[in-house]
Image (cartoon, rainbow, N blue to C red):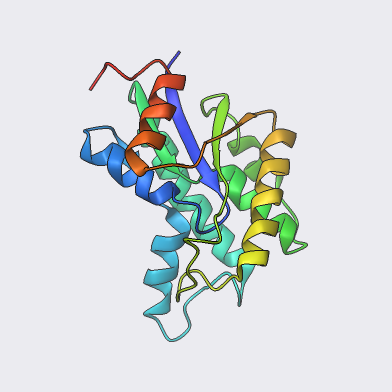
Length: 179
């Protein structure tokens, strides 16, 4: 089996560092759409940000993630830093409606979602990550629940060095010897 593999979890869990390591090893990866869009939209006077207009920000994420998913599914293996289910989780946390189109778009990824739990020791707030650590844990719990509700098997990634975490994921996928 091949696929577009989702790496997700609450903010400050180290998933982007693992994605970056996988990219350095030659794996096809896709950056976190929400973080990219927050940086981009923050440069505009009336930028669309999740803390001022969550539904419109979700639409921007949906468009970018749709393109990422399309590109990823044309390759044998790809790794996504967050995916459509994350949009559903954040909308649920914001008490916003989740469209049928978005729910449908959540299918078609690799059946296991690799979940990264935030660690207080490394957690840092910044301009793109305004959550407190307690809020990051609420986000994490919603992500776990959302992906399970969407029918994915949630696999907790053990804590450790970036390389070890990435190699653990590759081993779970049977890919450790391909690069």
